Amino acid sequence: RAKEQGRNTYQFYEPEMNDFIYKRAQLEQGLRKALELNEFTLLFQPQIELNAGKIIGNEALIRWKHGVAGMISPADFIPLSEETGLIVPIGEWVLRKACEQNVAWQKAGFPPMRVSVNLSARQFQQMNLVENVTEILSETGLDPQYLELEITETIAMHNEEYVIAKLNALKKLGIRIAMDDFGTGYSSLGYLNKLPIDTLKIDKSFLGDIKEGQNSEICATIIAMARNMNLNVIAEGVETKEQLDFLFQHKCMEAQGYLFSKPVSADEFVQTYLSIQEVAAGKVDKG
Ligand code: C2E
Ligand code: MG
Ligand code: MG
Ligand code: MG
Image (cartoon, rainbow, N blue to C red; front, side, top):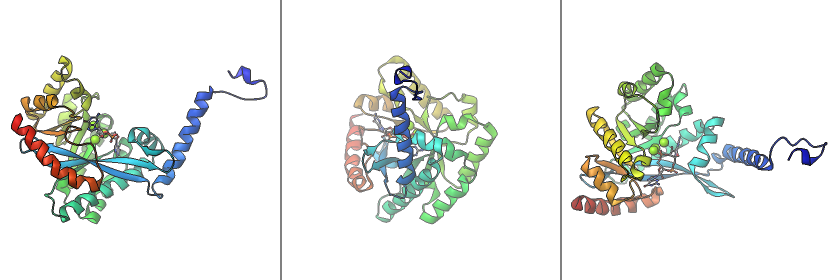
């Protein structure tokens, strides 16, 4: 195509490529302004303790309410935020907001529940991460035992000693650490065993097709492994009764997914909280 443009123009890319670069530049520009324009918002997805049928926590999930494009999902802007480093101030905003909201619910009389916050690799590598978390905990007044930070195997892949030291420093604050999307990465069991983590989150891809032998075996293995390692285990992406039955059968007693609730706004969460208690209780009776 470049040739067709004639001699005087420099057209190195396919038009779609230009379009892609243009969109990316636009996205980045918007991302830079999103914090000050107050365009981010947090949704909260309940996490259920299946035995008691009670909400024991929630995961805070960011959304970008773009002035023109509307609601943008994290999959479409978190990677670019990471590349540009914008994830650092954005992540700090998420953490502060999530802690504030949790304190607000406790003050409103809800039984204390933990809040899980996703941490990107870039944030994890920040020199002052531990100081930041300390500061946010004290500013918001959240009891550290209710904060859980979710890391991924990608974070844990890098410098082993550094990762362990940093996780230990975080643990010293009294917070919890979860390994998100577990099973999708490449970390060895030996390494995993060395990490001071509290929770394994089974990636939703393994639950998706629980009827397929391989996936159900992976799920069962992760659950058994967590038990042997004395780790808490939670299944994410639970959508069907069938998946729930499987979890009961294999004694994975925590779950999160559309079966109970999609991520909802802070305002909606209160209503969701009440209705889920009923749904979850019903499922437990049947199971
Ligand atoms: P994640 O941490 O693994 O979060 C779970 C994702 O699964 C969420 O997507 C959630 O809405 C979705 N989900 C929950 N239950 C179900 C279900 O039953 N079925 C299906 N199909 N999906 C379900 P979401 O909110 O679009 O977030 C996508 C990813 O973006 C997250 O995956 C996380 O890696 C990242 N993310 C979201 N918020 C943040 C944030 O504040 N900071 C960082 N660093 N990453 C974030
Ligand atoms: Mg997560
Ligand atoms: Mg994640
Ligand atoms: Mg996940």
